[in-house]
Length: 158
Ligand SMILES: [Zn+2]
Picture 1 (tube, protein in one colour):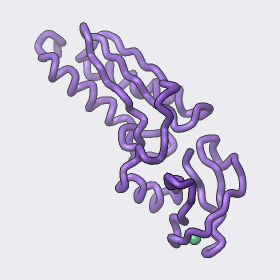
Picture 2 (picture 1 turned 180 degrees about the vertical axis):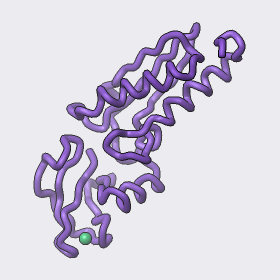
Picture 3 (picture 1 turned 90 degrees about the vertical axis):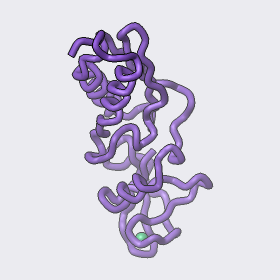
Picture 4 (picture 1 turned 180 degrees about the horizontal axis):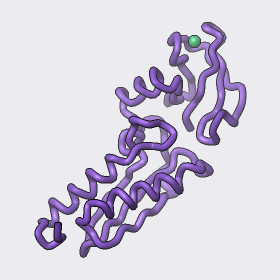
């Protein structure tokens, strides 16, 4: 496909679709768009500019995500270049994740997201008696908590 055969709008849509198709390496089945990591997608003069927001600045998955986004965008052959930037602002918050994806994370990965008031709800039993136990979980992007009701460890996405 030659980029000249595509209208500007079709090019942008192809790039947006490619970006949205990239899954978070930590959560197979969940796209980075669903996690609220995609801030802006622009195309100008056959060059794509993608601004992403990290869930957690030190997350080692960021390099993988950027690589996957670049590969997906370039594979569309709709653009000739792709620039990816990890923004420092706005800051990612759990509010950027939609309700459906929250429930998927809870049921598939036993991973929960902090509520806007900072509280935690157990993804296993729904109890609110979840307390933080360790700032570092199984990955640097998740911390560990513990549910006093069902006595299950709970991972918290950050
Ligand atoms: Zn529980």
